[in-house]
Length: 105
Image (cartoon, rainbow, N blue to C red; front, top):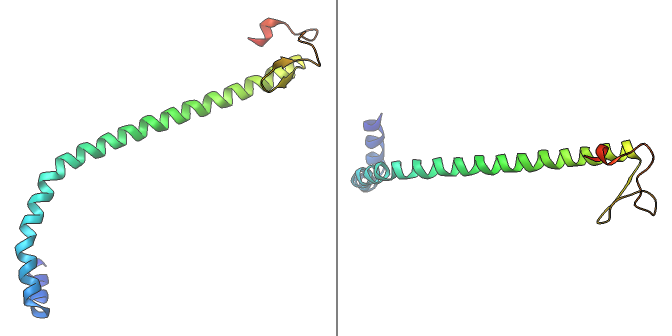
């Protein structure tokens, strides 16, 4: 197959075939020399991507858990969640009857 490609290329343009045959061994040596280095870099990138994905997943799960916890506390105690103000019921900070500090934990 390679011989056929060389033959066809030389029939179209013999100078192009000659340049390609002279450059090909050099390109092969350079690619073999950098193969190990590129594999190490690819492995490092894969490890970093995996680490980043696990961090994103952990943050996502914590966010879902905290959102679920806030909804649970609100439904159990009838508390109103106000951004930046904490948990409030109406205008005072007292807990509603039947809701204790232990149910908030």
